[in-house]
Length: 167
Image (cartoon, rainbow, N blue to C red; front, side, top):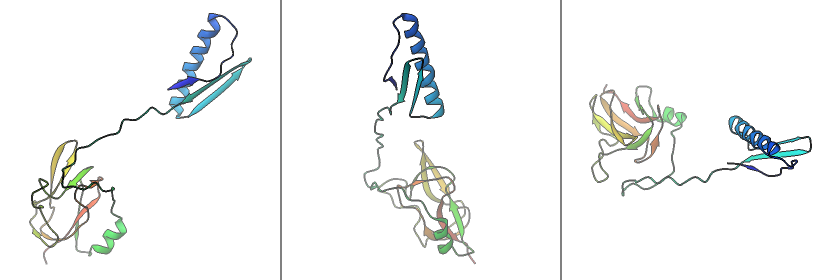
């Protein structure tokens, strides 16, 4: 993590111990303040501590075979406002996770645009920490628009569906 680049010291074990202690303190300061490097020079001794990025192992997630890997998209609130009539109800994500329209990759989706739903009917699943959470409609009505693609990550409060209540 931290490396000594240039050290000039007088001979003796006491000087080495002080340099080691100073190096540790500088490394702690670099980490605490989020610096990339720090250099100190005093009494003919120059010490430089540089933080290097540790190699990061790639994260591999198993996705259902029928879901294509696509970049994450977020829904612009202005677009939702344009699509949503004043009387529509927005169903929002109650948590962060992955949005799924069906219970399994080969199963039919819970709802499609144009479907009539009842209050409490399951609209989708959001997977969070390997738990499948069923998201229910908060009102009866017709699904006007599905705002998220299958398999996409969603954020807390992100609009998922627009439901038009019965007249």
